[in-house]
Length: 112
Length: 112
DNA sequence: CCGGGAATTGAAGAATTCTGCAATTCGGCA
DNA sequence: TGCCGAATTGCAGAATTCTTCAATTCCCGG
Image (cartoon, rainbow over all chains, first blue to last red; front, side, top):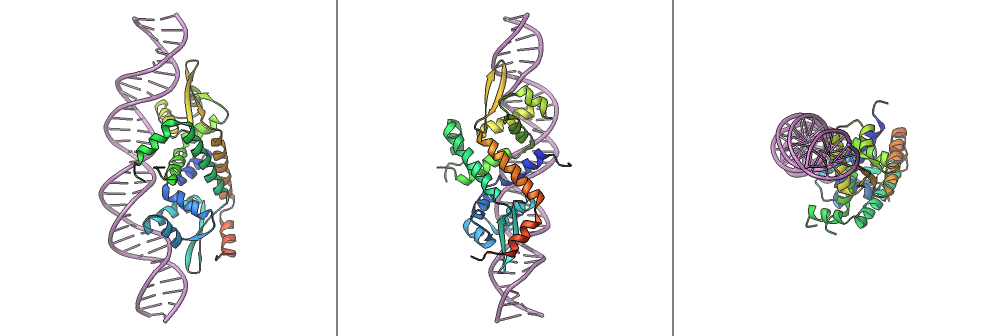
């Protein structure tokens, strides 16, 4: 294998490591959506959204196709939902366990 | 909460988005290990490993303690193993399928 | 108290990623 | 064909992350 497995995995997780990309994936859990809708629900510039969608496409976690004149995006596999759920569980476990983290997170972004 | 959930999630996934950090987590799945062992199994400089361990500690996915004169690291919650497993599933799904899913989605385009 | 391995910290430079703007492509439709 | 909205691409500057090397801290055994 040319690319070590742990490197491929790291790449996959890094792909999810962006607020816009996370939001996109969460929205896509409910089913395929046109770019137009994503744009309406996420506060981001069209070109920036396109960039992030391209990142997701490159890794293969989402696929895109055209339907009724609009470009649609969808999760490439429902397993993605499991990943997000697992992330959510860890997050809540960590937030309740460790006192320091909550304060740290709060410090990072005071308003909103 | 002061930090948007999707940003906290992104931070958590970004934390895993590094080859060394992934390897560490995989090794820790088998139980707590001293830094010394991690160092022996991963090809990385001591200081670099420490940096990456610090990143994992900051997010709260691992904890460290001292035992028998050595610093030990452990997963802060076994949920981390689920996350890695989900990542592995997605990776294999993406690698094996790819164009098949796309065709399938295009076929019955849900216009709801 | 001292020596020495274990582990962390600090900092500078290289490399990568993000953001926003402008320009371009792509399809549908009159 | 020509127009128009939808979506993507290219790019430059800003910001963030990685890597490496040197210095420092922390403990345990003698």
